[in-house]
Length: 574
Image 1 (spheres, rainbow, N blue to C red):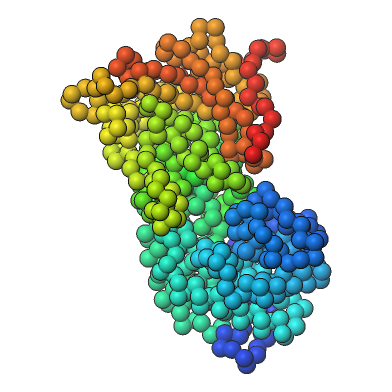
Image 2 (image 1 turned 180 degrees about the horizontal axis):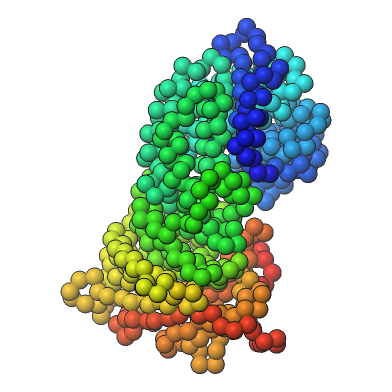
């Protein structure tokens, strides 16, 4: 459901006079909730009956509690535990909004306080703790309606304890999104809870510093993950409204960050509503994205040049091309970054043609390193290697919470030219293969004025004046991953591929390379899980064929009965 500004102000203003928020007890200093923030995330009332029946389905796993508390059960996966302990599912109980679901919510919160409210190695982790604080504040009016004084005291005491712990351990939180979310949670708490408003100035100052460090001048996030923008705006927009509802001026840096981030939502979005699959982006939360975009007053054409984030976009006719032209993020923020330098995505009307594999919404750890490899992107692999090196040492990985990128493209020059007749041309390169193989990958792409032809060229040059070493392998593979909805058939000369779209429109891929292969691929970022797909691959050797031209062009609609290699096979087993 889309939440307008006027509706939110009315909601927030009403909370100030809600009877349950005026309750006061003398047991603690922080004993009163004075306001609650709005939750912009979509809720599903049908999930409430499952939770009431003790069936907890999170992250693709189902746990049936059989009259036991879910907090006593052994988690089937880390992702399941994260979702359970963050309490993000409270919004589904709120969507049902009945006396039964309110009692169920209070019972589950009470169980958590009893079993894990003192300490838990996972539940008190900074990122989960931050999300739980926000969720408890979001759903407080629902949870506390009809609650007795005992539960109210217990709820507020636990919430206050969690806030104090998060404040004391803030320095231990990971750089990037975890630290930002912790500061957002603390700022929410200081605005919502009476008795800790003295911390507001300090928390707001820290939040401002983090916004300036993490939100780049063009509005992208320093992690280079497009999905971070949706997640952050889903919290920052209610936070800004919360300042206003408390008769406080929102910090200028908060307003400025939101205003910069909004255009980037349109930058990454294809015409079908989905985000481009770059640097850890998984399935697009289309409902949440639509809700966040409802707050965009400008609603203008997407920006085309995001140099600080390292992305480019070309729009012409009904075609959009998005390209990764940036270096990996700093090592401390690269745990989810991908080795996809110079990869691109191509969409026409409501159809995505060329994509990157992306990341699934569940079982991420199973697929993560596969998805991060260069081979999972529509770009070039050299000698079957990725353009980035990932830290493989187990001890260091533990210290850095994941598998960061420790080496990769250092120099990624870019030239953008707006063509006189319309469209644009991008000329760029990267040196990610220079240290291992002495090669620099160059890529040029140009989209014509009406968006019907995308021309490209990949070339390879030695990284120094000595030329390519005869002792170093020089095999390359140029990959173009296709969306699962696209069907492909290789032409008889083996130098072209016919692409059939779901609406029977046709695009053609062509090249002068000796041979084009159609191979299996996998689309990981589907809303229904990983799906089989196809990829177009050109193989060659840099010493023999250092320059390869290729093209995607729109053709006339296909005639019925055309022979097509199908890409829409059943889902992959997980």
